[in-house]
Amino acid sequence: MGHLLVEGLLGVVRVFLLLGAAFRTVQAGDFALVADLHNGTIYAGSMGRGLADIAPLPLNDVKRPVAVDYDPIDRMVYWSDLESLPFPRISRAHLNGSSQMIVVNQLHLPDGLALDVEARMMYWTDGIIGYIGRVRMDGTGGRETIVDGLDQPRTIITDHENGFIYWTDWGNSSKIERADFNGSNRMTLVSDNLVWPNGVVIDGDKLYWCDANLDKIERSDLLGNNRELLIDLTSYTNIHPFDLAVYGDYVYWTDWGYVTLIRVHTSGVGAQNYGPHTFQRSGGLHIEKEPSYCDSTPCHNGATCVNVINGFSCICPASYQGITCFEDPCGSGPCANGATCTILPTSGFNCQCPSGYAGPTCMIEKSYVSAIAGGGCGLAFLILVLFGVFVVRRRIQNGGRTVQVPFNMDLNVEGKTNDGEAQQGLNNPTHQHETSVRQSWQALGHPPPPPHVSAPDPIYMDMNRSVP
Ligand SMILES: *[C@@H]1O[C@H](CO)[C@@H](O)[C@H](O)[C@H]1NC(C)=O
Ligand SMILES: *[C@@H]1O[C@H](CO)[C@@H](O)[C@H](O)[C@H]1NC(C)=O
Ligand SMILES: *[C@@H]1O[C@H](CO)[C@@H](O)[C@H](O)[C@H]1NC(C)=O
Ligand SMILES: *[C@@H]1O[C@H](CO)[C@@H](O)[C@H](O)[C@H]1NC(C)=O
Image 1 (cartoon, helix red, strand yellow):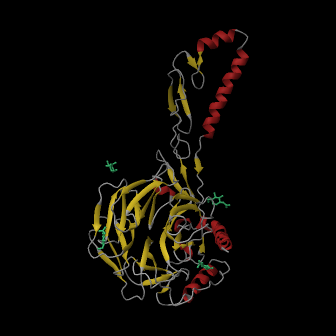
Image 2 (cartoon, protein in one colour; image 1 turned 120 degrees about the vertical axis):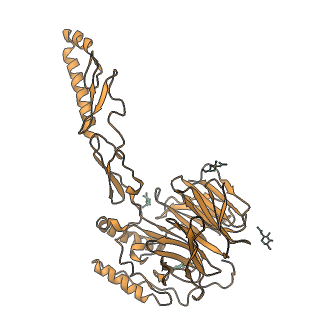
């Protein structure tokens, strides 16, 4: 069942690989991952299609997943499971279910999980022991406790650019804190008027969080100052925001009281359901933006970077070569015997030999040339020299001018539909959403997707737990 659905999803993905090329600038591969605690499922769906293609990932033995994150480098999803046996643990797998493995085991309440993809480290919170741990993303090298003595830590996020981790604590004295990646320089950012800060996320220079007790979404700067209310949700029945993500002009969140994602414009106007009725109890949310590979300025020496589908391409200036135009042809010291190497204006290099030496790389002693030229080996030596010239010419010709680096995403889907289409009023049924998604499919010249089966209304809400 799960496999069928995912194959359906990947089928759609394949179709749109072609379209993706034409629609590259709209980040066609953006997708959301949502952990459903009660269904025991992690769902994936493309943002460009308003989650119309949402499907469970074919993972094994997922019982009560709560936190979820994604590594675009190895293309793996990471999740924590509160009820895996014999112990709660954090696992990872490719989106197609392959290479599933446990990253850390024997945890107690791993409510939060965050990857520092650049440093290849994984951080997690444990709400029973009250600590933040970290381990290499492949699980090797042993685990380390970097912050302890916490009360009820929940979400954790990483900010590699500024060098901080941020986390929420919904215990006796609720707060949002930050520290260096090694846990030092701990600092409380927000603590007033905070009760159950479930989710926290950074978007640019803003920190957003949701409070499931005060039913608010708020934001501040990265130091917790200039705090402002984004939306007051107290008038929405059964609202219980859990985790949030900022994507485009909207803040999206999972909510224990609702069977869809919900989103609100970053201006704070209007909350809307987003996507089909899928969830029994949605927890961790991660929206993966298809990377713009040129953003990391991978090309050197003034090369022009071009985003190509799922990768980048460096157009090297004259004389430089290699995938990122880093190699200057003289860099490897190709000229022998103290010869001067000059980069040729087009490509390759030229060795200016000191007196007494000759040949393309000045390897040949002239006296030796004349000595053997008089002997019987002249022909053999000439062949040797010609061969040397040939090798150097080959090196020059192979100096890559334009190299494409493939980087295939697992989920690569169509260009975004009109952003306003995949939405509906918060208290309205999904019908309008479906109609618009079907229309957008038809507009793109594709057969409409089959109508989805809605989860039963009224919305799901577990009244037995009073904590977030
Ligand atoms: C999860 O939801 C799917 C339908 O989307 C359903 O078939 C399955 O039985 C559910 N699993 C649980 C454990 O509720
Ligand atoms: C699953 O996905 C990974 C990463 O995208 C890929 O390397 C692997 O070949 C895929 N496996 C199958 C069976 O499709
Ligand atoms: C939180 O409050 C409870 C009950 O008042 C107390 O037992 C517990 O020690 C407190 N925890 C912390 C970390 O202060
Ligand atoms: C922790 O990291 C900070 C910032 O990188 C560094 O200044 C500090 O020396 C580190 N502390 C320890 C104990 O490693």
